Length: 356
Image 1 (cartoon, rainbow, N blue to C red):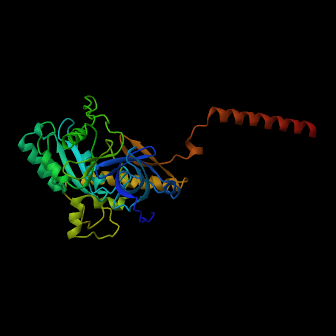
Image 2 (image 1 turned 90 degrees about the vertical axis):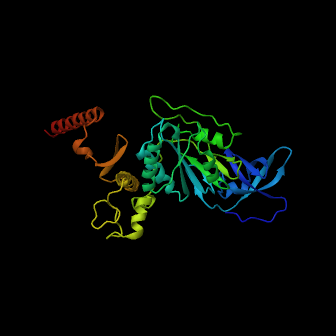
Image 3 (image 1 turned 60 degrees about the horizontal axis):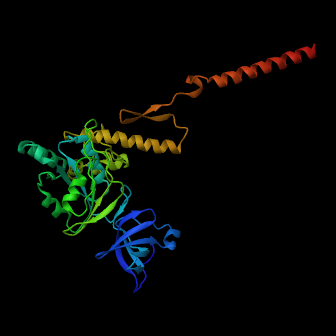
């Protein structure tokens, strides 16, 4: 990281969009299209959306400038690539598509792993009755979250979301087709993001966002729209996973497991294992984390006796078959072996004849 230099001609701004080798930087009420100084490229300093940067040699008439330095980041996400975010606004739909608890749990675990604050927003609340909404509220409170029930279509609780985002850099996340772009259009009417309908066959939406971009909120703050995805990768270790469940953290705050390396499956005197709704989700994600760890170890050890198999979306390891014992010999190999046998036989016959 380069140290900031005192330069009366330099300005501080925020990178709000990145396209190829160009960076759109917001300085007060002005946007400049900037390039990265060669020295930054030489030292390997990347520039990300959300970065606070030092801009030099601004060309106000042409709307151009150059990024000379990048300030130290408070936070950094790789997927999506964004710096200095403070919270995640996780958007799901209650209906159309129907809310899948397992999928929601997966997104929540991914969000928790970023160490950012998590705000859960559930769209299309106008399609459910008050009793159903209270059931969902009670259920999610047991998970450790206080959901905001909204309806973009009926303009319900949009103001509550706006207050939650005020003066913060927020990343919007969630599966496709749940109303993220529609919500952003409500929060920032000047944006006019493209909206896609939900696929009838698949029960999910098409991706409408292609890259990360920060938008100014009228009440202050910045909002990062990110490409939609349906199954975020869980890249944590088996040991880390339990920390991303608020219910498990609550249990570990008042008790401890007998073993320090407890994975909370069938170990004796485990403080986490028990009767809580998402425990089955924990076991599913734990198996996935273990399989991922084993796969990484296998890459480091190609002689491993197991291989990763994925069936119906679930990954598990199976013993490798011994190649020489079980694999059928190819036709080409058989022909080569026959040719070699034929040549060996001819050599033997010639040697026998010459000897006699």
